[in-house]
Amino acid sequence: MWQRLPFRTQLFLPLGVSFVAALVMGGVLLQTFSAGQLADENEPGRRSAQTIAVALNSALSASDNPSKMLDAFVKSLGTSSDIQFHPAEAGPAPSVRDGLHGAHGVPQWFVDLIAIPDIDAASPVMIDGRRVGDLVFRPDLSADLFEKWVGFLALMGLVAVLMALTGAIAYLFARSTLQPLQDLGAGLTRIQRGDYATPIPVAGPPEIRQSCKEANALAATLAQLSQHNRDLLHRLVSLQDDERHDLARELHDELGPLLFSIRAGTIALSEASPQTGHLGNSVQEVMRSIEALQQTNRRILDRLRPLYIEELGLEASVQTLLRNFRAQAPHIGLTATIDPDLNGIRGPLAQTVYRVIQEALTNVLRHAGARNAHVEAATSGDALTIEVSDDGGGFPADNVFGRGLTGMHERVRALSGSLSLLRADQRTYVRCRLPRGEIRGRAEVD
Image 1 (cartoon, rainbow, N blue to C red):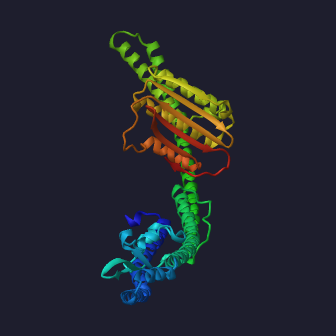
Image 2 (cartoon, rainbow, N blue to C red; image 1 turned 180 degrees about the vertical axis):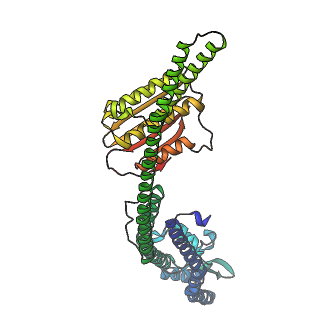
């Protein structure tokens, strides 16, 4: 539990507990020693009161007019003396505690905390064997309590100042330590996400500074590796395109004429021979097979290398791809928003855009079981975005890219772009973002 607390809490919580403990300890020490100190300070006065009471009783017993002598003695005491005469008819003598409520502005809780001892004393005054009152020792403790109150405030003020000073030092220390740690954590998060360009500020204690330097060195190394990886992917994609181009040329130049020759020979054979019986049926079957082979050859050529991208432009090529999809899958309602500015894109970028849309639509047709699909391709500033969505069944929770999308992902990474596959609002989305021109970006998979 303690390890889960933030560093500032772990630092300031013990300081707060120490402050509370100091207050409690001060109260305990005040209650323990103040009562005994007050009792010791007033013990001489208590004994003097008892001695005066004995002397007064002796003088009254020897006097001819004890009442007059007692009155004169009472007047001599005054009102400020700690020794007072309390007549018997006035009831019980008041306690020392009774005169301490709110004395000199001392709070009552502090008076209760002191635990005033029983230091008052009452000695009976006798005239002719009859008790006429008590000689009471009632010291005024308000000044003593005020002195202790001021001392308590001074002690607590000193503790508060020390705690504030310690807290300020701890706060500055935590700030100087935590900020570099937070910068280091944020930098490592950026590195984890693939952002190697933003350096981590080098600050704080030497240990943290060394960690920041090592993290920056790691980011630089990863940036070089990432760049090398993109270069290798770009080279690999280029080699694949060259290989497909060669294969497409071979199919077009070799297989195409052979199929045309077979078709022409079959037509000539059918015209030269009477088409009767099984021969006529065989000729028709051969013609249908040749037409199927020619269509298959055109589809293979189209998938290997859509040569008309350079002739018609990317936007027109994508529109042709959409028309072919509608003809092949009339049961799927396909809508599209294609930016005409796509015609300004050439080279590997144009081929990648075409391949991403082609592969996404192929997956919709083969696996989604969708009724509706939507294709959107647009340019915005220095970026090109592609989104293909459908209302099909989606993909499993542990979905990973299949072979087709894996190939597309490699193409996108080679161009420093991003390709993501997600499910939201009962629709499946394939989203691609590609930088235009020579802009380098971070390749990622969501």
